[in-house]
Image (cartoon, rainbow, N blue to C red; front, top):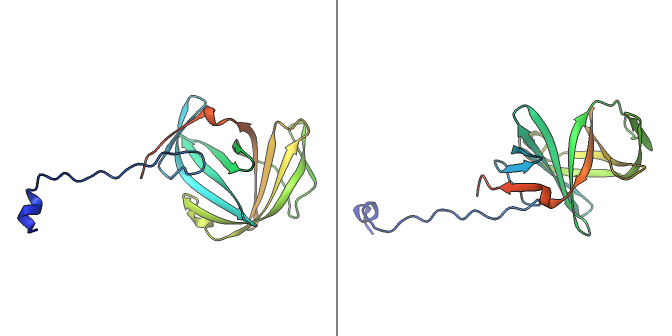
Length: 170
């Protein structure tokens, strides 16, 4: 087919298909609606530890940042986390206290991470982590050692129906 034939062809180019989104395949540029706010997905971290995989999505709305965690254990587990200021050192202690609540270490390990978007700088690192749970099992604390920086986040469970995902990319 010649160049003129291609230019004046009646064939329309097919638009790429957008894949349906679920909490395990959210992409950079997608929009996640949660608690009456629309957040843009600006970062994604995939964690892998001994064959187990989970995700953390950095969600931005104005100047507000939250993290959506997603993992498939026996069933889909979702959580919303916010970074807090709490001095913690490595090795991580067996329990932590914050605002009158004590959190007990539930698990720990070291995960290899793949970062995308704003999180791409962490790509390939091995991150020591520990997960904590409150005594009433309604609140969670995540602690991660990013080099010499230790990041602490406080979170809680949500259900899949509480979020809506709008694909912003292919």
